[in-house]
Image 1 (tube, rainbow, N blue to C red):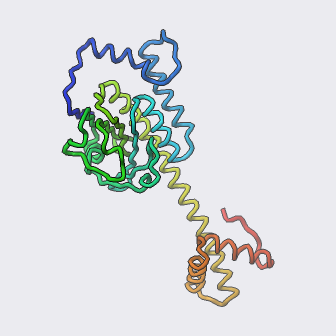
Image 2: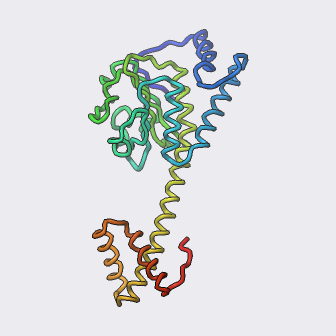
Image 3: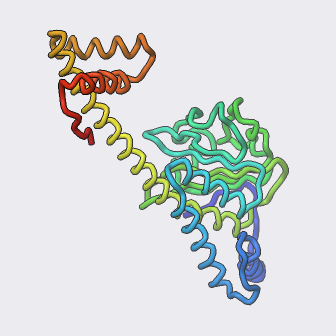
Length: 271
């Protein structure tokens, strides 16, 4: 995977060695100072795995990724966009943005973030990020006025799951070590994000099935008691849902409960 950097940085063998040795000091772990570089790499991967494995649910996974990434590379902003269809949706932020999280959307290829998702390559901009020809301004995000910008794809099995952005208010040269660290997080987090998203989707399907079952029971009760057709019974439930401003499932559950209290039907499990 290549890296696009707007400012040329040369890495000699001596500097490479120095950066690798500095890795253990970068990660926020309590480690023996005598640990080898290889041990520090293992601890880094283990820490990422532990944090993601203990997360509960899709948004919790994203929150853990934000916390971990912004701990690895101290930054003023950390945003995660998740690919949903052909759009990238802002799903998590280090800074509170309740007005745009889960709402702000951009197309693949749009802005630096969209470019990263399209080309599956990191982009590091050390200064004047807004002058990058790929940059797109969003009035809802104060971070768009920040000086430096690092954007890395979240990958799973060769597919983009989303993009993670780190930003700095002031000039900041993203060293190769930092880019590699966040890219590592991106690879591991991509798989976890996909798994969490699938679990959420399965949970939603289960809830939909549960709703369908109780609505079908309620329709049957209305057909029996009021002499309605199936369509009329459904429209009755729909009308009550609108008038009482309650979910159709709640209306259906109330009808089923009332019928059971009257002793007209047993109380079978709906699962």
